[in-house]
Image (cartoon, helix red, strand yellow):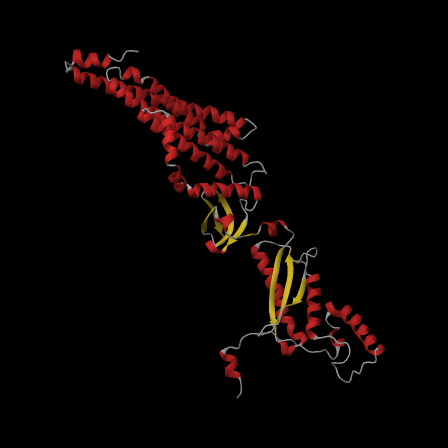
Length: 414
């Protein structure tokens, strides 16, 4: 290959000075090499898109499709073009040996960085391919790709400095040991994030699409991404919260995965019953009209009568002997109501219970699990249950506590 063609034109035909002809010859040759390289690159890219895409489409595996998606072949074409350009430098710059030394190093550095991009595209392809398997679908693969890329970029930067300064890698690595404390400080978050990612994976504390709540960061939604630096949560109000990955092992948070995988979503809510509205039932048979209590009232009424008769209890006072309270009967009614409710999981624990008395009344808590775990449906089911409770309290001569309003004071007769 001759590189003097343009030189002879500028020197002999256009009669330009030697120095000018040499530089114009260099510019012309560089332009032609770059033009040829660009054309070849476009041809390779066109052929790759046309034929490689067809081949990938016909194969059964999706790995080759992901190679095209992550531009693996495009990065290969770029590296090939740069290698061709680098191999022609010594010919193009034969008149400029001082320029060749620096330009060769610069091109080598560019090739190094393009190799990094090629490795990155391979890693992304492997990550996307593993995502197709159920085992890896919810694992934080992004974190491993990122830590590998951080290490690779550090190595490539060291190599780049070594190439630019023409110093051996050993000297750079020796000098790097001196600054190890500074590097640890700079990459502290990265190191902590990597350690956290490993612990999260090993302990299986968080997966992609898990519903988590973390009050410290106002996060309440599904995990959409786990990477080296942060965990991205899409909240239910469609806002995005970024949580430092290390916080998931250093701070407390709630993961609702177990609930999602179980047979129901827990209902745990209470109402306050006025203590002075709780009393013994004088005529238990009056509750037989309540269908859910008919069998119970019949049996318990007979049982209480037999007990009082056997023990000769003086029933002139209601407190004597064995009695039922309206509060206890109401709890039994709610148990029967939950037992026949179609949206309550009968295989999981359900009950109504009395909690410790408070200055505002006696808490009556409903503890059960709805079969439907979708948030909107769950709220509707729970609201329907408590609507029924509020409406049925009066049938048992019970009262629900609520703070008096201005209207209550206005209607009070002094």
